[in-house]
Image 1 (spheres, rainbow, N blue to C red):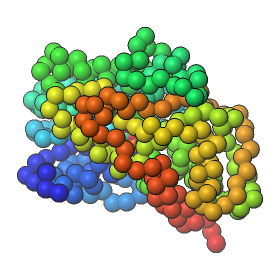
Image 2 (cartoon, rainbow, N blue to C red):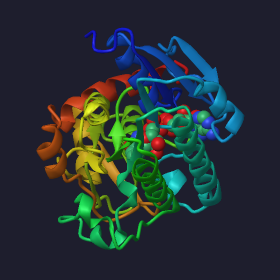
Image 3 (cartoon, protein in one colour):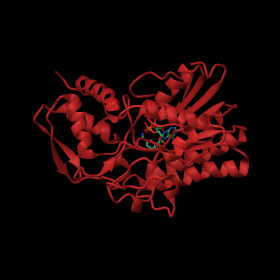
Image 4 (cartoon, rainbow, N blue to C red):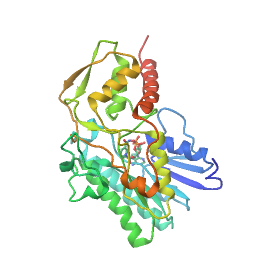
Amino acid sequence: MTTGMGKAALVCGAGGFIGSHLVRRLKNEGFWVRGVDLKFPEFADTDADDFVIGDLRDQQVCDRVIDRRFDEVYQLAADMGGAGYIFTGEHDADIMHNSATINLNVADRAHKRNIRRVFYSSSACMYPAYNQEDPDNPNCAEASAYPAAPDSEYGWEKLFSERLFLAYNRNHGMSNRVARYHNIFGPQGTWTGGKEKAPAAICRKVANVRSGDEIEIWGDGLQTRSFLYIDECLEGTIRLTRSNDFEGPVNIGSEEMVTINELVDLVADIAGKDVRKNHIPGPTGVRGRNSDNRLIEERLGWKPSQSLRHGLEQTYEWIERQVHRNTPA
Ligand code: NAD
């Protein structure tokens, strides 16, 4: 691919899961890429031409990294994690303060540098809890966002920041793009330590047990979700960023909805193990959530190209290797 020959991109959050994959994709397309993050990617070397270790809450750091016009800017940096991080309430102030400060800084610096377009990653967590109580029939159509009632402060911050980027479009002639990601997963994502999400946590638990053993599952496992593989997420992200006349907000997710119990069964099947489930109390989030892809299909002609199983196979293989590498023989 040579789409990016002679072009420059900035990836904020380039040390994170989606950001590090995005840097690789942009490099493959021929872009010169600058990444910025508090940390380098955890599981592989960065592919960025220039990687700045810096805190985007600091305006001076923002000035330093947004020091020129970029053809594409991706704002993925956020204080986030899985249910064990965002739904317990213990990190609410940090999540809101840290992520909002980053977004305020990046939107304003981009505008002052005459950068026309920033891609911003919002989340399905901004959808109202009252539309996600029925596990079989959640409503996550873009237009269902209001009256707003996210079930976490993480979701409220996302809602604020998507409005912020769109306000810069209206008042400062920018053409920022806003996507609402739905549970992105894949290799080289956080898989242990408390910030991991359900697919990675389940892959780790299954990799750690022998056939016939049991693993712990938060809640009754009947809550529903859909999960999108990283490569699909990058394709949707790039198409939205480069679209001529569509700013979003738009869902980037999968419509292949499963219960958490079904997700466990799928991973167990991939692993070739018989795994029993021990349901224990834990943070579970809303009862049901699924992407609604009607708008993105209509406006960008995009939908995921592969099944959930395909992505889980790649992810399980990678997590199994990490587990064995970390377990003394
Ligand atoms: P991640 O946590 O792996 O990446 C975020 C990165 O931002 C981290 O590397 C972190 O160090 C960096 N960061 C945090 N604070 C920073 C600061 N002050 N200065 C510089 N860097 C900072 O998360 P991810 O899964 O790659 O998600 C990327 C974006 O997509 C986030 O905005 C997230 O909210 C959003 N999102 C992700 C998902 C998902 O399922 N992964 C779902 C919905 C939305």
